[in-house]
Structures are given as C-alpha cells and as structure tokens.
Length: 109
Image (cartoon, rainbow, N blue to C red; front, side):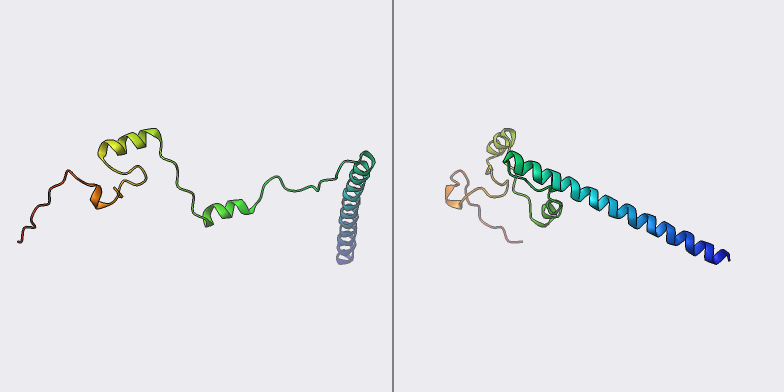
C-alpha cells in the first residue's frame, strides 16, 4: 500500500512539474508574441533576443595568439639608449649598418 501511495505522489509531482513547464513556455511565447505585435504596430524592426556576449570569444582568446603589444615610450627610449631595435631587443638590423665595431681575430685554444 505504501508503494502505491509513493507512486501516486510521484505521478502528481511529475504532472505539476510538466504543467508548470508548459505554463512557462506559453508565457514566454506570449511575451514574444506581444513584442512582435508591438514592433509591427509601431513599424520598428523586431530584433531577436540574443546573448550580450559571444561565449566562443573566451576560447578564441586562448586559441589565437595575441597581437604583439605596442612598445611604450619608455621601452623605445631605453631600447635606443642600449642601441637595440625598438621592435625586438635581439634584432638590431642588418650587419652592414654597424660601423663602430672592429673585427677581432678568433683565438684558438
């Protein structure tokens, strides 16, 4: 007998849940319909409800490399003071541009 009462209670809870879900869907459909009708009545285009952000942008940030940051003014000044290139501290241009270096013979050990 207790098993039967439990089944009836679960059936009633399921029916209440299904009815509340149906009411929520019908309410959402009614809001959409009123919004569409108001847009048609006023002559304004009805824009769809969309998410305010793109959820894929979080993944794209890690998938695609970031653009190189522009050097600040302090970076430019300090790189020029060291005689380095502003773009990269390693690349100083072509070897022909260097004029103040004297070649030294290689010492053999």
